[in-house]
Length: 373
Ligand SMILES: NC(=O)c1ccc[n+]([C@@H]2O[C@H](COP(=O)([O-])OP(=O)(O)OC[C@H]3O[C@@H](n4cnc5c(N)ncnc54)[C@H](O)[C@@H]3O)[C@@H](O)[C@H]2O)c1
Image (cartoon, rainbow, N blue to C red):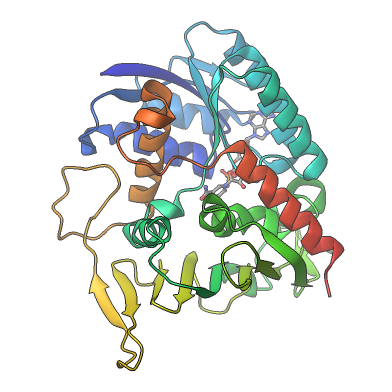
């Protein structure tokens, strides 16, 4: 078991989620490597003390990420900071020679993403991947395997999406994810887009003829200090595209919604084909829907309970349910597997989202803004 010493830059929602995944590493049967949280960098001292209070190995605590990049006690970085900081901090990490798991969208806009891509090209020995955990849900993996096996016949259409509802509350105080200067002009797409595009991009379904419907439903929000301030980001986006090069062109629709009444972190994908159709949603996390079709036969969907059918085996019994933190742990296992064994010798084939996939997501989101109707 090789220890990979991680520094975390950004100890907020996602930084803490990684700390929890690292602490639960014994859950996995994967024995080649494990992450050891050796340092935390956050400008907020309370975020830092959560790490140093809870994680004995976390001995480096700093508000200046350069100090972490200069340390020879750190091998790799997980960076989970607001989008306006991605370009500068990701590029500095890559130049320091430390491996990087960054958060999406990998740059606040296309220009920032291009700058990160050039740094990566100059440092080919550094492993750089983007966090995107939903394809590691067992239902999503089953659909990926079926795509790989070309099981669908002629694809009729693909719908993928990510729906949230907390912004339906007009009294919800604005945070950085609703500010164009910090989150970016993509709005909900920058926040949720890569999650939705990850599987289509992995299988080469590069969209063309991109059009989008973008809506800003809540144009103001309370600022938490008694004022009402503008809320300029897109709340909801529906991106309509066509995919060519796989028999007949087919429509690929991708929805990212911050205001989908009643939905709490619902990620889904549905692939319809002439021989097979499959659908999976985190709303019903253990149920995979499958319809196999023979000409003239009945069209009947099956609902299959999946159990804990994970990419990497764990100590959890196969009958138990799988959840968000499990998908995050599995994604991290894929990162460490690729880091120590290389892409070709990974235990299972689904690797983490690549920088090239983030570039494609920026191309789609930029076109969506340009072609919004
Ligand atoms: N993979 C996922 O499911 C998922 C979910 C939510 C967010 N994200 C992504 O993760 C990233 C962070 O989002 P979050 O929800 O964790 O945000 P957050 O606001 O909870 O945490 C961000 C942290 O960064 C710190 N920070 C700000 N400036 C800093 C600096 N200069 N140096 C060091 N630390 C600094 C903040 O103090 C804060 O603690 C974003 O890119 C977001 O899109 C991913």
